[in-house]
Image (cartoon, rainbow, N blue to C red; front, top):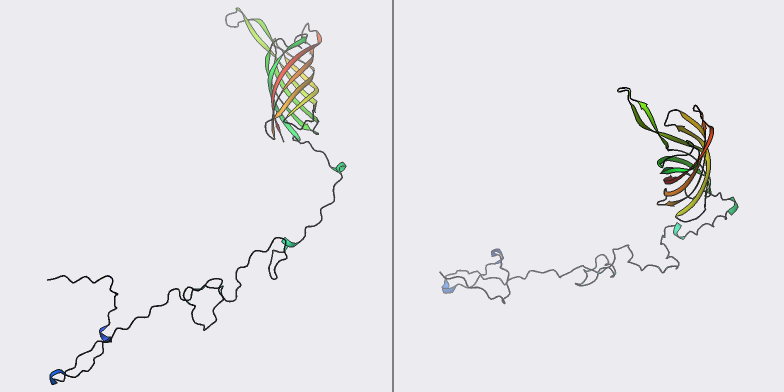
Length: 301
């Protein structure tokens, strides 16, 4: 068996004709037998639609109903009843008729309000109206009589709360405490009956009933201040008992803003203590002086 020959690729392919399309043709019989032989009909070419028939450019005019299809490659126009794309209007030019620009976009602005009298504007503190300050530091003797004057260098702690009346004036009150003195006592041990030495600390508690703080009105990150105030003092004596009196404070410091609501600062505080010594053999009213170095963190709102 031999393989079928491969057709030449350059020869065009002719569609096959269905058997029913072949009509019988009567031809004269050969040899007088009266037989008929079918004669093939020439192939009928299949119509091929034109490429891109009916495709039009968006800029081409619309085709009227019943009109022949657009030639291949022609450009389509916008759909019937619509307008083609229009260029943007020039800024400041009159709008085209029938164009809606949004209504309020072309409405003129109302006239500005009347200017306020600067004398009627109330000045407000620009650093927060209220604050809370937490303080730690050291206290030591400066002079005077004991126990109104401290006899040791010790730590202190306290807190302030205040109200900024304005950018310059502030009012506040506070409470703080520290070890005031240290005494050594000889006592009898209740278990052995022997004499032993014990050390006891005397503690001072300050209540600043009111202090006035004046700020230097600088519009910078750092703001110096000075304050003056007074209140009550209570001394819990190391040898036992309590003494009460008056006290005064005066301070000079500076605070720096680390955020819109938080400050850190340092201040030197002078304390004057007037204690009424009511112990047996006491001296009556005695006066002592102390100096404190204070670091504080403030929260403002």
